[in-house]
Length: 256
Image (cartoon, rainbow, N blue to C red; front, side, top):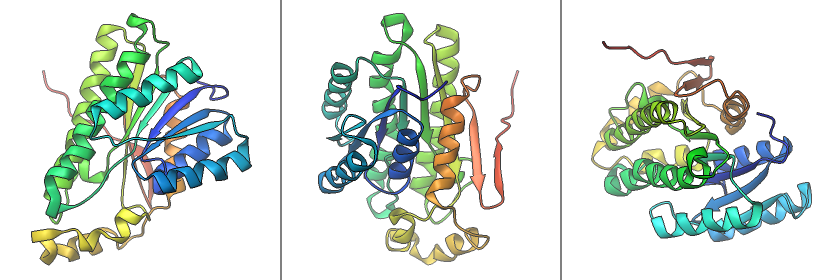
């Protein structure tokens, strides 16, 4: 899918991976709606992108992915403004073992909420024009982090949900591809504060240090994977793993 003129929605867009994803989409011709709970950072980024790409290329809307009402309102306004939606990137996420219920609410339930609202607008069976949804999972969704059990559970959930909704889309004829990216550690604010959010598992901090001994990804490494998955519409239900050694698609076991 060529990105010129396409309409994309990115959650957690004001900083880190989301900011880089948004910039990459804009550089490739898309129009982007930035959703983030941080209004100050979102408005500041919107102003910077206006200066770089023009005022008509992106919109910021404050949105908490824990609120179905805010999500629905944001998507309704997006459709009203741009006429439709072609790409959704579920990027918003946290890691906080001390507040594990919020971690589950944002990382997993938030992805499901946003995806189901996106489906209402993108589903070809109900007047949408199809498109691509990319969810940001983690290598912790394929493997595990013993120092972050709740975070690991949420990312396993994102992987399972994405694969299942991708299969449902194919079987139902929704016209939407659902894929995910599973990066290793990425140099973001989430990573820089991870040792402060381990809660009762703080004694396992060395697990994270060991897992990142071979290096930490830059946000651009993840954003480049987004471009790969939104432009190649032959991919559906795929998990693209990326770490400092490179990237590859996960092969999942099949059962009969």
